Image (cartoon, rainbow, N blue to C red; front, side, top):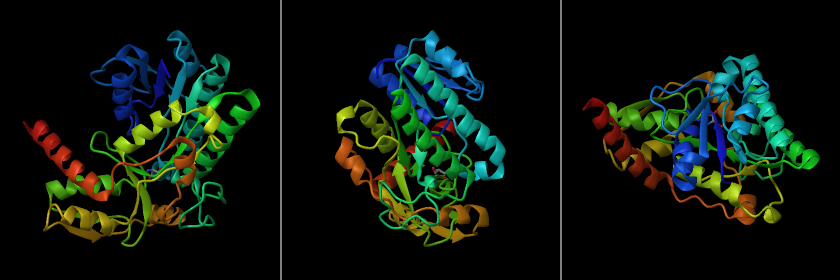
Length: 316
Ligand code: SER
């Protein structure tokens, strides 16, 4: 990767990935884009509506990029609330981005998710290659997206690569509209109020990962030797399998009087229950050396410290 266009650059992953790519590949080589302009843009920024057929193509061509990192999408709970809009953005955007990559001969990354699995998928140690019959619109989009990316690779030779992200946890940009958002909210509430009411029930395990590991995974996969890749779209990756009480325990080790309560949201609980409890990331480890550096305790220490600094800065 030398010159990279990022769509959805103001989103949960995009806001941090763009900064990391700028520091790794040079500020002049990263073109950030989103549907809206940020209040104070830093670096090169373009407005792109991914659902418009030619927006991505035109900006990719204008800057002569060699890679598209396509992140613009709705998360699971939002997609469940607005399924038709999710189809248009998640699928329409993806096909427009893939077409641009095909026409301009670009490398291509887009994330899939643990949401690409469904109730009939083996729940524990979920294999890389297994049954995928998701029951959410988000999941339908993700499976179709994985297949579409494989298709553009085998049919047109587009160098498509992707991972199935678990719930991503970060202190920079709030996720918004995901099922795993509780694992971010809990840290803010722990600092602000010393307690958190979880909308996901105790005992509900999902895979999770700290954002720095997710960003490293994207870059590592995109820089991996293609001859080693037996899979492309999309690799299972995970750093931990955790339920709400594990976050409560990890936070409790730092804030001893922290309390977790439960008021379950049936929609998001239903989505969570349709996903695996823990996925197997062996293919990613073998084919491109994936490894996560953070576990729940090191992530918790860092999250609490960074959020405290952020709250202090914002109130200064
Ligand atoms: N974090 C995402 C969500 O909850 C899963 O990909 O929607």
